[in-house]
Image (cartoon, rainbow, N blue to C red):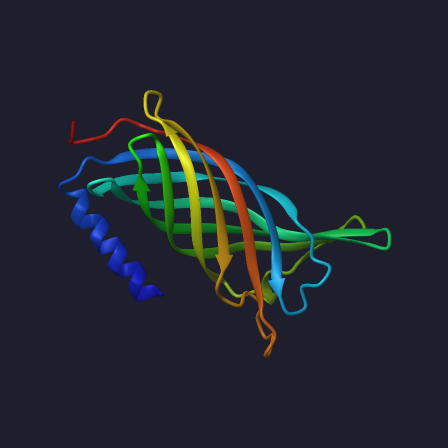
Length: 195
């Protein structure tokens, strides 16, 4: 996975030297949970995401879009009158290959690496640090679609991040993965070095 990232980033820097680059900002809502072994009872937790992106034209109607995004993830539990949540904050770096239809609609997919910033359990009015129970990096694959209003450089998107790696440390044969659905808005600034 790391070799794939290096290859994609190398392509990004090569294309950046010759193509019209657009920078942007984005923000939205997360609907996250955990899947896999020992995740029974994990319910969807609502969080938020915010970050920056670079849109880099490749050829025809295709582009490459690396991003750096803060993402509030985790899950909540609500059983037998007891409620609690695990709040896991990541810095995610997706590198997305996009098809941009001339109508404004687009499709996107690509790998994502996440860096765990914090993980805390909150229950019964108490908060406990839980970061040492999780791996520091997470790998996932993103699938998304959206619409860009070209006249305003404003767009909306929806994305699903499918967890590929086990995020639980010392879990033996058990595997726990992130599962995050995102919706949001973004704004692209004018292109540089191009039209």
